[in-house]
Image (cartoon, rainbow over all chains, first blue to last red):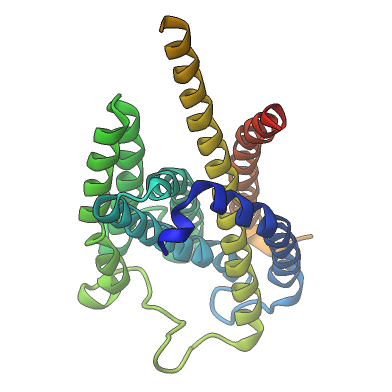
Length: 242
Length: 43
């Protein structure tokens, strides 16, 4: 694992995988949209509104997966001081925040015709809003502290504390009485979604996953280039002043 | 393409996804261009 923490090695690997990840995103997103909008049947109860599920549920999955990625990278940053871990966590935060915002907006738009309200302070919705604020807090901490090492440490600690919110999001619909429905897709137990609806859901989840990877690589490339430029400028300044 | 009485909600949902993902991808790609320029300069 330590060998992958080398920025030069990461950049070589990333450049190799980037076109394939982009191809994966384009194929999954295009076919996912086709199946979601044209091929999948309307729900017997919700009618056409079920189509919002194909963009809402994958966004919720990515919002949580993105935060877990951020927390694991923050853990690696604190424990092993990986040079790449801070960069990875810092670059993943805005992507996770955007997926959380998509989840909140599409959920709200889905809620109005099906529940009769855009928002309700139930456990699931509130815990996802807390997740969004955790992402914003993480981004704000990086911007607020000038010393990069201190900023990385403070942001990593916040990220690790925030992990407690992930099981709360997951089990909120079981622990409390919520307006939000329980999970329909289960890793253990019977899935209650029709196979015709599972396919666009799977394709859109894969598309969001590929998107996350592509945008993360772009942001990490930019961040590493910025660090190298700063290091080179500092070295040149030292040469001039010596 | 019509989805009945809830057309607006469905279009708004998909529009939100397309706009926000495109904006983030574009800003990230523009940032990444700095990397490619930097690589060209150091070659």
